[in-house]
Image 1 (cartoon, rainbow, N blue to C red):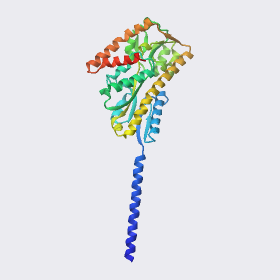
Image 2: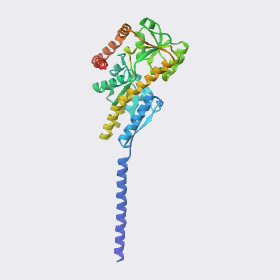
Image 3: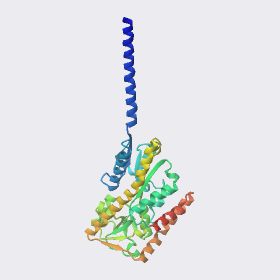
Image 4: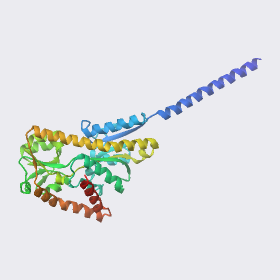
Length: 344
């Protein structure tokens, strides 16, 4: 009898242990199913910038639609990777997602450089839609090491100056703040490009180091440069843009469950318009700012606009020739952008 009781006690203990282990196993499985995937997102814009805020909303929308299964942590202002290193940081896995400008690594994106050319973008919404559509259509090899989510791009560059510019003659010899592609535009118009960062531009205009700046109109408000210019010339007929990528590390993308991948792309498709609208909102704030300062906004006559187009034609031809010599479809790429612009 004693041995029977011992056997029963031992059996009960074993059953209890099995029950506990089984319950723990179930709990572990449940925890693994609900434990969120966390990704890091490096953004070069400061947290206060409207484009950074729009990206935060994108991340929050994804978290909501995935019921918290995907959480995206935002690192704004280059705190995780600096602007020029964002793309490589995504490729190497320093960050899982990144937003920055193609133009910050000249030569790295030879086909997509065509997006930034002075093709006459009328606004940020148009530039954003066209940039995303073109990248998705051509699927260039230069983006093959990441997963492209979408692209957004600012509104047209305009000429803000200390004295009115109404004709090509007014630009000749003018010292104009410009960098990269915009410097080539200034040269083609007969001006003298002066490279400097946006934080330096206010004082340079104020002291007469430069006489004008080529920039999106939102810059005049965001950097208060409208205070130190007297007029704005609408040069949107040759409006250039700056295209900005949002890409994900390929391995991070491949590791996402298929339903989460679908949600990420659905939200990204919707946010193309959100970012475009944000750029247009910023431009409108810039326009309102210069009007409040009673600065003149000059609309050029048709004949001057024709001269502007002719002046920058060489920049477009040079891009197409370089792209084609590298085995890239530069001419068809530009033709497609121009067709999309004409359809607007």
